[in-house]
Length: 457
Image 1: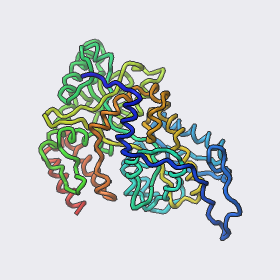
Image 2: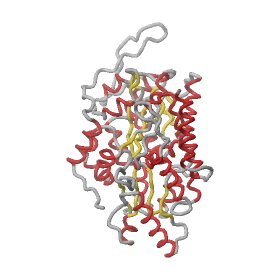
Image 3: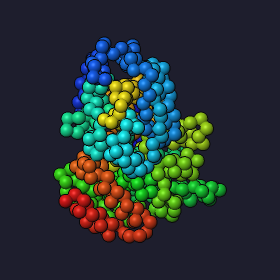
Image 4: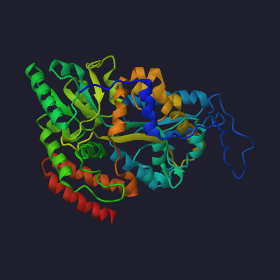
């Protein structure tokens, strides 16, 4: 169990693997002229600053639903202040719901009413198919960026030829582990299988409790009934060769013994190596236990790295990140659910030109470089991974190559399109019933199959 080393070359390979062949860079084109207003065409071409952002829209105010995570939200507030200074466009920041499920419901309510209250939405990687009817086509804005965005994500965000959102950052599920505690208890690296994680978590938990910390747990993750549980549970079943719920060809594959066994296994963690309250945990609840120094392992996204390395963090310089464990059988494989967020401009916005400028600003190479350094959110532009400051700030990127190379798994959002929210809700609700002891894995996967047949018929 050796840790993965990293080189600039390895990062370049990683970028190529994700990108396949990146979106061709193009020289920034002149911004399109403002559309006609009041029945008259614009008298002159818009003016831009040295960075290529329009300044003729000064005095406009737009509203943006941003991140829900504290550090990232504060980072975007700082970007908003800089954007206003450069362009004169004011951005009113609105903090979104932490639960992706609640956030999507909020978006659908607003957009379904054709509300102009919000100009720019920050949308999940699984939502372009659902939200496409309400989105401005950002293809021209992307071309102005003059950057090599990962083609896979651009393709994910393109629905019927329309670019629904420009990528802000990408992510994947990661395993955080305490390097000091692994060394203390004689382990030379992170677990490679779920069985190894269970054994290591139990040993460290018992040792730390015996040493005087009764609040210490072996493993924390996301167990509440929301989209985050879909991500965690998909990793469990996929790593044990249990499929992806609905396969790319539309086959409903959830009802199989490997998927059922993976859910039953997770149930055994609760009260053993994971807190009884884990069934109410989202990302921040898990991080709270972890960052307080009360867990040996944590499943979370990349944002938790920078927070754990803060000067006032009790675990600063005491942890690392690795690939999530694989299944125990010969066909087991590591699995990491793909995540990430995009900037979408509402077609109902009355300030579309200003909203597009903000979407360009927060997805630019400069913003993504700073975002990676300051809040550890992985860039969607290949060249940013070659920046030495980014690498120095994020040693955990050493683990990203095997994560994306071996175990990246997408949720079935493309194949189920606008029905994905119903599919995911059905899935995480049944999984949660297993975790809370209401039912067992075999019954749950059969129930999920039956309900998905009804939804997708």
